[in-house]
Length: 270
Image (cartoon, rainbow, N blue to C red; front, side, top):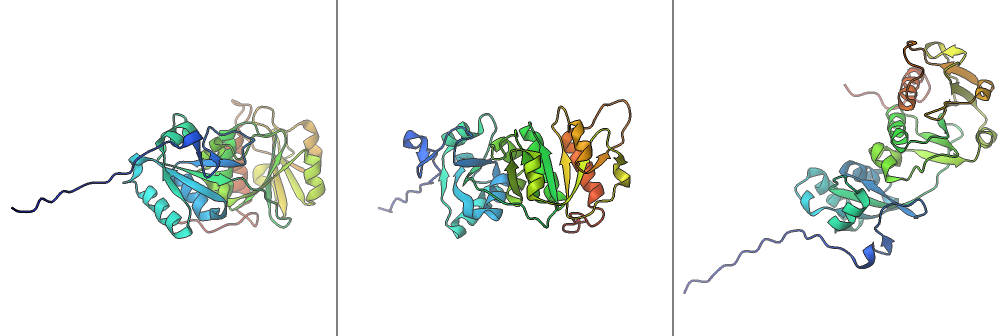
């Protein structure tokens, strides 16, 4: 009798870990007090692996993402760097809420210091996580990678910030300060405050490096005393609006400022 050949197809299987933990890490919805956070999505996870591999703890993968090119890149990087991967759809669903993700990077939080020789962005009391992520990505796009956050301020490690930055958070250095006075005491430099009643129009401003561009809260902007903190700058626009959104103001200012010496990064690709 001819032999019978049986063919089996082994698929990736999703499973839940006892106690919702892996390697002692609670794989639950993010909380600020955790010592770890998440990079939701394939792109953010790749950025984590490429720019902060030393902080990577684990990568969670979806059983549905096996054919995704980005997932295959993640698996290749993790294999080469010895970073554990795990198929765990239930953990991804808990962490990402209603957002569909083929991958979630799990990383340990880290501190950083700001270079005294580099140009900085300072955000005073930023309150919107999506805006913060967008600003971080914009900073990296213009070659400025040092960020001061003046408290109270949102949590830069919140996954909503990481996702909004598309992983650009892993390119920058940042530091929290209790007050702007503490920042000024630590970094002696040229300061330019962006205000609706600033003295100098943006297109006429001349930025001397090293310098810091200072922006206020999304709702209230910078208080009046910041007119005396350095050279105040305003972005001219039509009278039909009272102000620009914070990410737009940062983008316009960085574009104008980096046309000269300030924050020059890699040349744009055609």
